[in-house]
Every structure is written in C-alpha cells, then in structure tokens.
Amino acid sequence: MSQDQELQKLKTDMLGAIESAPDSAALESLRTQALGKKGKLTEMMKSLGKMEAQARKEMGARLNEIKTVLAKAIEARGRVLGAAALNEKLLHEHIDVTLSVRPQDQGRIHPITQTTDEIVTIFASMGFKVAKGPEIETDWNNFTALNLPPDHPARQMQDTFYMPQKGDEPTVLRTHTSPVQIRTMMNQKPPIRIIAPGRTYRCDYDMTHTPMFHQFEGLVIDEKTNMGHLKGCLLDFMRAFFGIDDLPLRFRPSYFPFTEPSAEVDIGCSRKDGKLTLGNHGNWLEVAGCGMVNAKVLKNCGIDPDKYQGFAFGTGIERLAMLKYGIPDLRTFFEADMRWLKHYGFVPLDIPNPALTAAD
Ligand code: PHE
Image 1 (cartoon, protein in one colour):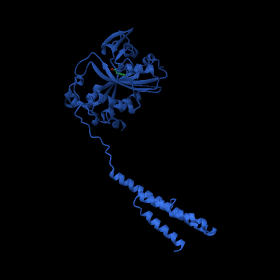
Image 2 (cartoon, helix red, strand yellow):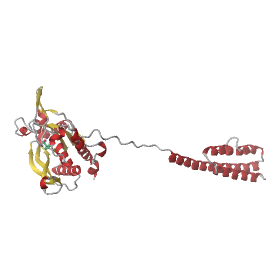
Image 3 (cartoon, protein in one colour):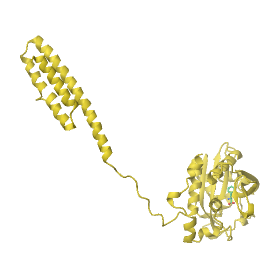
Image 4 (cartoon, helix red, strand yellow):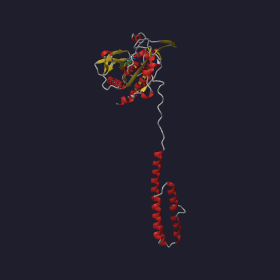
C-alpha cells in the first residue's frame, strides 16, 4: 500500500468509527487516537522532519486536511450524542412540581375581606393607590376640615362614639372614611389618586345598620379632573365589580358638605316579587355618595382650588357584598357564627378573579 493509500484508509476508518461511536466516552477515546499527542496523525507529523522539502510540504498539507476533517466529524458526532443524552434524560427524569391541594375544610375568607380585595384590585387597575387612616380620628379630620363645623346639622346624621379628649383635640370613632381624604391632601401634593377602605362607626343598629361597618373612599385630585371623570370611573368600577357589562348608573343630585356639586349614585335593578336583581331593569338602588371636592375642603388642606380640582366618592362595603353575594342581613356579618361563615365565606382557591373582569 502506498503511503497515500494508507492515509486514505486511516481517514475512512477513523471517520467510520467516529460516526458510529456509541457514546461520548467512545468518542473521546477516538479523539485521543486521532488527534491526541500519541495519536496516529501526530506520530506521522513527527516523521515529517525526515522528509524532503517538497514531500514534507505535500504530506504536511495532507495530514492537516485529514486532521481538520476528523476534528469536524468528532464535533458533529459529539453534538448528536449530546442531544441524544439530553433527550434520554428528559424522558426518564421527572420532577413533580405540583403541590397537592391543601385541605379546605378549615377557615374561610370573610366576605368583607373578599369584597375589599376585589374593590382594591379593580381600582388598582385604574391606577389608584391604597391609603389608610386611624379609626380613632380627630374631630377636625372627621368633621371640621370636611366643611362640617361643630354646629352643622349634618353632624347629627353621623352620630358616633365620642372619645376622651386628647389634649385640646376632641376625638371620635370616625363616622366615614372621608377623613382619609383630609389626611392624604394634607400630606401629599396633587396629582392624587387614592382608594381608602376601612372600618367606620355610627350609633345605629337594625337590619341595614351596625355600629361598626366598612366603607371605602376614593379621591382624585388633578388640574383638569371633572365630573365626567367621576362618572366614568364609578361606571367602570360598578360594572367590573358586579360583572354586569350594561349595568346602568344614575347620578342623583344630593348634598354633602365636603363636595360641590354632590350626587348619590344608583345602580339599575328590578324588584319583581320582592326579589332584587341587578341590571338594566328600570328600577334603581342607591349605592354611593360622591361629588366634586368642595373648594373649602381643598383650602382647608392647603391645596389651591384655582389650580386643582377633583372628585371623591364613598360607599359601604357591606352593602356591595350583600348585593353581589346575596347576603340578606347586615348584622350577620359580625356575629362570628361559624355556620354563616362556612356558607358565605370564601376559600382561597375559589376566589373569583376580579382582575379578569376589570381588564375586560
Ligand atoms: N362620606 C360620605 C358618607 O359617609 C360619602 C361620601 C364620600 C360622599 C365622598 C361624597 C364624597 O355618607
């Protein structure tokens, strides 16, 4: 066999072996054989020194070419073997990332918590931030700053629990979440866009009133905010919250000392055979109070009413929960009856997702 034939044979043999290497270990030993320091090609390279110049040049080029071909073949086979090994692994190695459902027979989410979460989620999607205030509030924040001076008759409609005086300041259990408006405007520069859910107190107790109840307040202050924004905001919210796309809203002129003009908000319903159904049915049900923030209130908080204006609204959370989830008696919310909670409460895994409705 001529040297050339010998080289050709070496090349085809090696290529054959490389292409059929069963695994990466076999391939690795072929690499050493072919290209390693003690490999055949390296041996032949070493003998080049003894050759004539012309023959050395030709032989050197030939050997290098074979080296390149073999190296490429090894690399290609390596890729194939690597992919096969990965597939094999994927096929046989399983990790179970599911967690078995936790027992749900204990504990419930109270409808007030659930409803508050839903309300906050919807307003958050409209860019509102949550604001909070204390339940024991100064008389000034709860009444006076909201344009309800000490002798104002509207104070009587919100008769509350009067707390011991703190220094010069009389304090009360807040009768509404509106003092959070004052706190926010005193501490924050416009633009303002907040939602303030929380507990409120009044001296009432019957089917639709408990001495402690929940409200949420909304406040938006900016340079060009108008009544149209107020209407659009509440319309979007009510439709998202109740999940009724064509729920109509009616804004009825009303009076609140802290808004001017003021309105009461009704949603559409029917009352056929004593059964209340929400929707576009020709009848109306009151659900919220609202209006454009009174310029006097803005001034009381150090905001220039010639530059800024805005709107506010307030709603009872229990009322919304009762309407949405068909709970007939307000008092039952706070009786801590486990049977009631089991019936009307929520388990974490079946929380209806208000965010989806809001995003529609
Ligand atoms: N605070 C009022 C109430 O409790 C509701 C309200 C809030 C009205 C904001 C107008 C603006 O009845």
